[in-house]
Image (tube, rainbow, N blue to C red; front, side, top):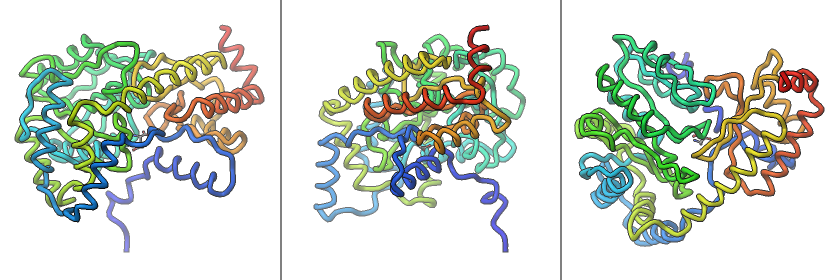
Length: 399
Ligand code: GLU
């Protein structure tokens, strides 16, 4: 008896696997600092907790419609409209179990076997697998050295089989925030070449330095008509364990996702829907701005420390990740070996760049308290100073 080829070909999410490993080591008594997973270390806002508890206590925790409750679809539509400056109707929103679930629903709705989907590297770990699960062909497109888009490379990657481009701004793992002009250029390219634009906007609330977040849907009705927004509660409202998100886009796509999910998952979690509704109504919960300000402060400390250690690190303006270049320290095992040694010898868990399609950088999540970040930098510093390739790395940095 063997598993399906599909099941055999899927690997466990590297971010989740590393998080599980780091947590298991902590449980076993090891003093590990875990900068692997991207998960806010704050509790969900009080209003969310209260609404979820009230829902449980009401006893009325039943199936909801497959695309979510009317009230939440409307609240999300209003919120999407307010943040992006475009009107959305509740029928243009499908509530899903997470943004990951929304993305996989959109990909399964739009991508036929053999269709190509452009992934702009470095790209979040699950994109490749989700496209493959749908029978699509992930096409990885390199970016500029500052992690911004390389439009010539994107144009070159388009073939008659290309169906979608996946945009993720602010980016996981780099923190790069696309400028409005870059979003416009990609959107117009999609329009010209007849492509769908899947816009993963899960980090839209976490943009620093006043640089505004740009969504393709704000640009024109024509671009809005070929864009599916994927977003959710996990990062903005520290609601990772609630597993709740949404897809917003043209009605036929949303209805396709709804039909699909009606068979695969039935309906999104009723308790989490109430929590999300509370997060979206009566104004933004006060905890959110505080959390974003704290991420911003940590970001500066972390990136300054990485640069002080001699690691070239693109300046991240959004999300909660830094993505330093460690290639001078790599042996034949690449970034995976670098991260294994760091965890083994110095109890610091990071994510190797291979998880995101590039074997030159590593990802650090700064969704953990400042003293831990400072402790982590001390460990990384020790690791680099004792590293067998230290002299080589210092010479490379000077040249
Ligand atoms: N998106 C987060 C990360 O990249 C959570 C884990 C996951 O789903 O990959 O770490």
